[in-house]
Length: 602
Image (tube, rainbow, N blue to C red; front, side, top):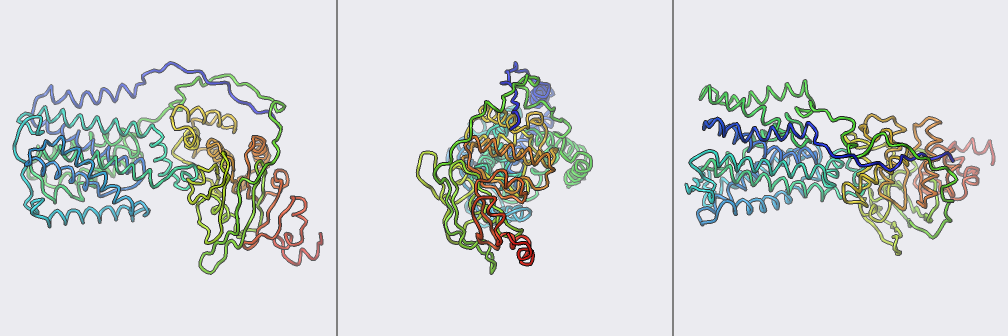
């Protein structure tokens, strides 16, 4: 085996405040100070509106940007926040308390809507959120005794901090700015936490995220709960600021689209992009309304559309795309030029003896309609063993992989996995198999394309290391072992096919699995990359990881496998040592046809 070169332990570099942080701090300071210095009521109103819409767009971005779910019904939570506070004020309850109550109700409603809607994909999710918004709006119009119906509700004019209503504008600006700062802080914390990494991974490649141990539904539900609560809090204050609420305005589809548009213009999926979009569009529309008066009715829609078309044409990543991340953004904590230390092959531990069965599949059957894809498939995998699975195209190999990793439930049969502490479990979901120590790759490689190589590996590392610093350290170590150190700061989409396959293995190995499922990791590789992949899998095997590999490259199967199973038409037709299996007439017939098997007897 060739030498394994591992960079020396990175040295911490002193933390520096970069120019981007200073620019953001200056921008936020200007949002607060400009209206205070100008002192004009109209300017106050414009900046209060900027703060409110910036906060709403940032809260929406947690679901629409980080999680990638295009919600067009977010006005539901905005309206709930406004109505909850407005209904409690006549009872003598401060809107500060009503704000918290509305946030709790909105979070529950968000989870209730998300449970069915997150099972939908693409435009169907967006349409479902619109449907829920229209239902809530009609209910608000119907229950006139509670909501005032189409007539609406007047908020009692009780002034002071307790009631969020003021004769002067500056207290309202302080509250609106506080809400903006709160939503930005929450969004920033989420994006740079394990939660945020999981959301982006789920957005990019949901199956790969699930294989990395992410409960994708739970993560999205948590995101919508946080987003709904923040949206509701802003809705509470805005209702108090307007002093009048009614269903058509509070539960408006146009308002929901407007919130999403600010994020799209500014840069969806970024922390400060929604604020940038708000800062561009809101002053334009408010100034047009102020200058043109009634003649500008509906002009804001024209402004939104024009700006959106220009952004899509010239800045597809939004305004935030202007601020390109440097290649060393994530590497600022380490010394990039750290010297390398070489660990010679002789220093590696010898291969461990194979132990007891660690994964057992019993009588697996799966049908799609009238087609039997796996029929009574049974096998076991021993600790430290490399088990090869071969068969012609359409034999049912990937379907079998999906059953032993939780992506498909067998119609009958069971898959049991031995835990590290002893005893078998029967997982029933991808993240359940991941918790049991099973990691897998995919036949069609599934990188998180918008993330760097290091961030991709961190998704796997988070499975055992919840803290960001610990996950990053594990990811750096794994990148070095997998030959990806030099590419750690580049985006995954820029890697070659060989690099992408190594990245997928690295992401799985960062999970520290005890069982590794490899689905045609050598398909499409050149001879050099095949040899490199074989050495990598040998290294993983020698570390004590049990491997099941689906492969068409017979060179790899013969070099790596301790035992081979042959599938054909969903059935096991042969099992044994690699050199024996490839000479089996039944196997030759399955691959090359009956005539060839008869013409060339084993």
